[in-house]
Image (tube, rainbow, N blue to C red; front, side):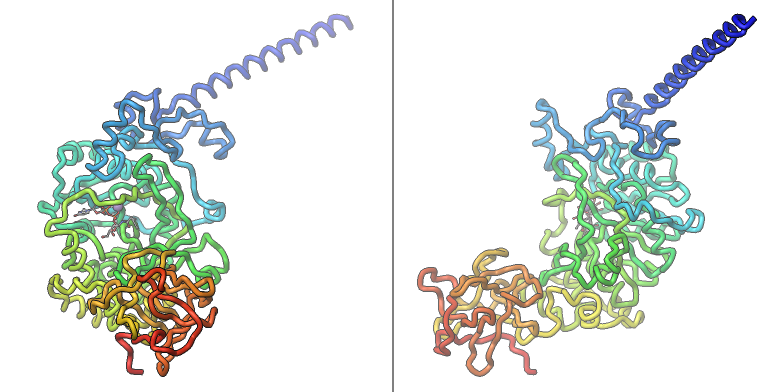
Amino acid sequence: EGFNLKMGRLRFQYCKVIIATSMVWIMLDVFLLMYFTDCTNGPRCSPQEVLVTAKPKPGFLHKIFPKGLLPNTQPMGPGDGGKPVKVPADKEEEAKETFKINQFNLVASDLMSLNRTLPDYRMEECKRKSYPPVKSLPKTSIVIVFHNEAWSTLLRTVQSIINRSPPELLEEILLVDDASEKEHLGKKLEDYVATLSVPVHVIRTGSRVGLIRARLKGADISKGEVITFLDAHCECTEGWLEPLLTEIYHDRTAVVCPIIDVISDDTFEYITGSDMTWGGFNWKLNFRWYQVPQREVDRRGGDRSQPTRTPTMAGGLFAIDRKYFYEMGSYDEGMDIWGGENLEMSFRVWMCGGKIYIVTCSRVGHVFRKTSPYSWPGGVGRIINHNTQRIVEVWMDEYKDFFYKINPGVRATEYGDVSNRKELREKLKCKSFRWYLENIYPESQLPIDYLSLGEVKHKSSSLCLDTMGRKSGEKVGMEKCHGQGGNQVFSFTAKETLQTDDLCLDVSTLGGPVKLFQCHGMGGNQRWHYDLESKTIRHINTDQCLGKPNPKEKDVPSLGKCTGSDEQQWHLGGLKES
Ligand code: LR7
Ligand code: MN
């Protein structure tokens, strides 16, 4: 009996082992099936599938397991994971030839899936942040304007929005076609977007109106509480939208930009940009990226996941409360084709009571190009001078002198009537440009106070300091004075720098040379003293004076012991009275 009982138990144990083993087998099968059956791109998917999958479905197991726990067995297609695309040898020639169509590697872009995967680039603090529930956040319309954009970059922009935004937050996507001449942007585009899971509408401007008026057209018909503008060659990353809308939800006068990451124009590699960069501008009114100063780091208590207050924005990627956009005067309709609207809006928003943030928890990639691929009816120079004069005339008060002196030719371009924009400034009771420099942008390349703005003329040689078009790190030159401004315009600033545009005269060794260096605003090697009596320009750190052309190199000034002789006397053009 005892024996039988033992045998029974053993048989029971045996069964358990068999049942357990088969359970494991079945589970493994299910695992493999689920893990390998979703198609984002790559050899498993038919080209058709790659083209039309609106959203890559995460595998079932990816849904229940926390991210990163499972190995990534998704087949990697070109560009997946933000990786650079390797153009196969037999397509290199084509890539070279077609580059000029869009000024980026069209072959590389076309090789990638419209749904290419990207890692989650956010900093840890951002992933941990909790945002208001989507139902309480404002919905946004997304406005994308384009002229002759490539199919793959345009549609990848759209797909990345759909794939990485909570659908509840998307009112619609508006594609504003600024008179493109490409077949693929015609009916094919309309048919394609009709298949998407979010309302996408194509609007045509009819004739070429430029990006500013095209955006106004999109904004006009948009229905969302917020408008989000994007360029037509972007890729939105995980969690990009919630932090932007959250800032507007808390403060409707906040105009918010993501960090703009770089998508390589050559390989389409996704390269993250710094969260320590903000927007500024130089004397020529070119938008420039500069390092966020310590002052702003401190204001945020050292927390890099907090939005940065930025003096200016790049202009292409930002969100704004729709009503606020119109209250603030939307855009200047008098601006043509491209350029300047970003600085105009930046000055206007800050001076008239709003704010501009770079929301560092939001990241969107953009294909940065070295030159523009499309036509500029009337000429690049004419258009940019036209637009920029409209900014400086309306917003910059006396500081417009800097722009005109460094760009002497600009006045020849007409800029139309700006009276309605001046009225807007009155109506909104906006503050002065000086207020903006003092309170929002004290680190600006425009000195708030200065002694002079004009040529720096050497007494005994009658030559003038001249940048000769040289760059940071090179020696400052001397040339015959031409009285035209441009490369011969310098300002002796209240911070005791001798500056032209964003370059300052800088000396790091006794006896020179005197170089041009990016102004750092911290004195040191860039501090000079001008003595109104003796007319000498003395470098404070070395206690030496600026003098006649260097005997060895005729076109650069010398630096030597101060003697007060004629050879060390300088006349500052544009000296201020006070
Ligand atoms: O006539 C035109 N019509 C258009 O619809 C000319 C251009 N466009 C479209 C164009 O297809 C593109 O989608 O306008 C958009 C911007 O033009 P780009 O991409 O050729 O120029 P960009 O990337 O240098 O543009 C930057 O500066 C512009 C100044 O007017 C705008 O503010 C852009 O939005 C801005 N882009 C960005 O801020 C992205 C980051 C670049 C930086 C710095
Ligand atoms: Mn662009």
